[in-house]
Image (cartoon, rainbow, N blue to C red; front, side, top):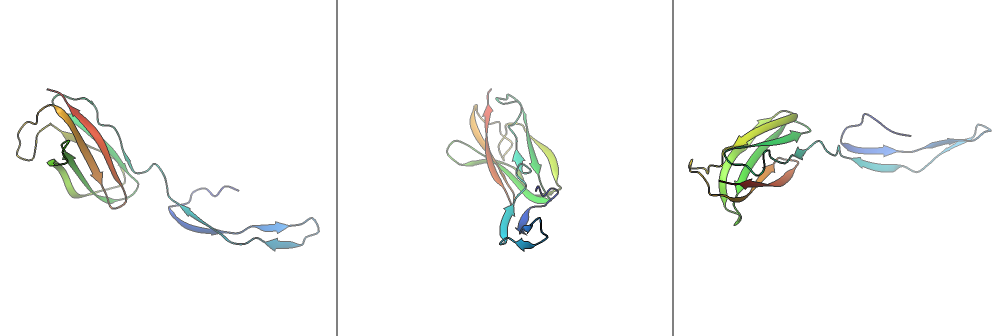
Length: 130
């Protein structure tokens, strides 16, 4: 038996066994926790490495509040691309031009971008090459 078209959540199942003579009995109840995997995603930015700008693509399973912050190798915040912005379900893109929060061009190097929602946190590596 395959239960299709289910949403994320907790489900309870039990089987009914029917013998050839018509007698039946039920199994014990089984609890199943289902989460739609793959609907929250942070894709690799493109291009990567990049020179002047890159595109960050992410996917949301449901409407959510999103933040995307870029950090240097020492874990210091260098750029807030989004803070607590509401997004609908689906695929979205944001761009980064390699500049910090003050508008200054950052040096070549490795940076980490972190996407954070109420249900998902993921970090990716961004390589800025000048």
